[in-house]
Length: 170
Image (cartoon, rainbow, N blue to C red; front, side, top):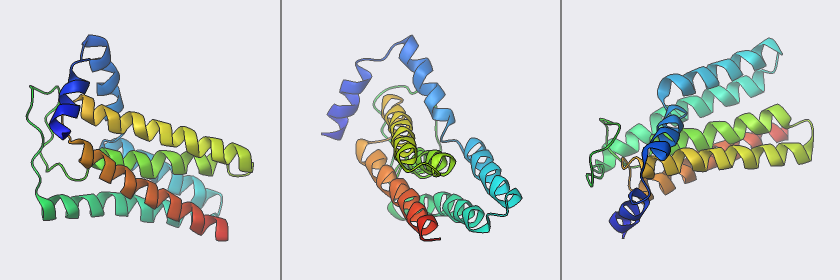
């Protein structure tokens, strides 16, 4: 079934969507995510918000470590259904891009808008939509199975939700 889903998504492939989803790929890359996490941790440290800085550091480290441990424990191969535009070298499960985008971007939006409760919820929703964009891009690019992306989203959204719950308690 996962193969059929990927082939159906690939049936829409074309130069424009190739560029769109190659762009989405950038937002899950380690260098970009490192900049986001470091910038947010430093921002909070400069504002003397140690709890927030710690939350970013913990979520950042967890997002690097947990997916890699799971990847090597499961050793699931990536799909090889067509010649892909990118060539990741690690295992497939879970999608690190999906984990990172679901952990960082909803948290980022919530943190920036948290002073206004309704805006914070909307921000989290926008961050979540962005995470779906990044995760769907992994499917479009043919480098992950749908279950890889779903597992990544679950892990990432759990991290961002736990960080927000912890920060709200303060």
